[in-house]
Image (cartoon, rainbow, N blue to C red):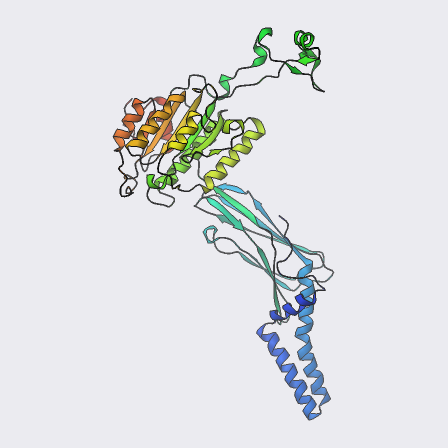
Length: 457
């Protein structure tokens, strides 16, 4: 990150900027100017030439320092480097600051200050000694946050002083960096979830190249195509060179559904039920992506990440890595929605918002639900119909110390679990103190208890 041009300041020859620099006189500098003017006035009245020279020296010295610092501050460049730019909650990132003196004169004492949000820690300040012409100085500090989110770093401020302490000027650089704090994740065991009949990830791939000649869908020849892939029958039929289509692997799909409704949760902070759900959803996303699934993140609002391209699912290769970063960035800033129901999410799962494919039934659904009333429980149960497998982690905010909002009739936890299981879900209760990895293992083993070690088979 290169530091940008200073805000609200002109170049070295800008008279307005020079006049503005006069405001940087310290109390000592103003005292020197006042004493010099007073001495010059007395010397004029008393006719003392020596005193006049002393007065002129006292008055001009601060002004000379103002001019020197005014030129110097535009000949000092600053930069910031943030590594890494995306960290899990509770992890540290390192910020390195670099100052370069690009002038032919040495600088005076420099004080460097970077502006950071209070949740990342105290504002870092550094004092740099004289920097020689063409020299540089590097300092670094660390930031961390227990709260996910996106936090701006900057602007970088540089305060310059002269050796006499008469002038103090500040330069603000205009560039920023952004630290993204994503939810904490935990490694999950590679289990086979209920309904995953087509295999796990890449194990269920198909290829058009394995079809017979009558099933081949050729395309026109493109420069660089291997001539060994020329399909002569189609070439003769269409009168132009045709080649066999490249292999098109069919990747298994997975949707991670996160219920973000405000009325479904109560409480806030790192230990709240909602933060547990966000962290668990992030762990699920990372796991299914590592297992080779084409994955998307879906919320109760019906919004799908990554976008609508490819049905809203991530593609393979580099695009999958970019989609993973986009989904984690989304979870870093996701908050409560004002929605009252799951109808939009239901439409997306059923195919109304880039669903599980044209045929349906070939996707894994992993859902995290907060408190549900009777209507939303029924709607959630119906989501199972168009999936090959569905796993639900149901949070009971009462166990997390929350209280349902007035007028929101919450279905008891055991009733919610029973109705979801009757619809074909593998449903487990998420309770405080239970590691998500253990719940995931239970889901893979077909255990449908309440999130404790004593769950029934």
